[in-house]
Length: 292
Image 1 (cartoon, rainbow, N blue to C red):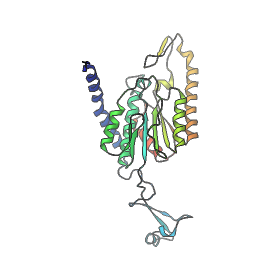
Image 2: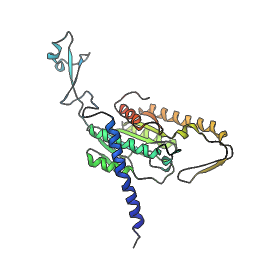
Image 3: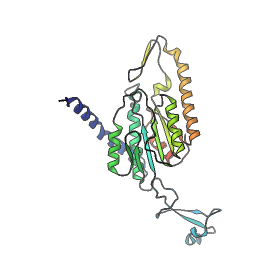
Image 4: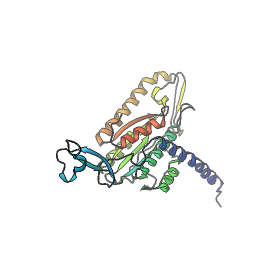
């Protein structure tokens, strides 16, 4: 009979991570005061949203004559958009995401999972369906779906670097990719162009540790991938700094260009910055605001 003790121990370890992640994500989502009308847009709903002045092309039947009678202008009564969208999230769970250069910084994977689940909670509260790519978790609504997302997000992958997946994306839906994007850029290109071909618009968030931006290494240094499959030793790490920074800048430029070509939005977040600032940016990006 197979010894189930190691499997049970791993299962209990994974389960122990779930409640804190869910609680932290709920708390983070609560700091963003979106409430019931947090993502209002004009559309075919029943609830009143706002008045706006009549514009060229508006049909007279949409004019609110009672409101217009109180001024010299005519106004349209807009209603709230109530058609739920499907949003598919991909979060890199590869070994490279488990890097943290200092104990005062979160691991990239921890920050990515926290942001992904917090975004999912806010989208769920806004009435939208959320799913997870690569986890056989199609977009759904409800608290049970948030629990399923949390369970899937805490699982670590075996690869050194992540490969974006676009499985489960519905035509003309929305998507969110979160990763350090330090692996093969071709995988990101394939996923984004495939999504764009189906009319999927999305947001790509690159998460980096401060040391990956600054390259503070000097003297004899052994660089090793978190997964342990790659290693490089140098006696003068400082001599690699300029080449490394140039390649990092090139990678960022490639991702920005890829997003511009496919109609996605590119964002960059450092684990030394607050998770709340990243969550605010993500939600503005989902609402069609300008990327920064």
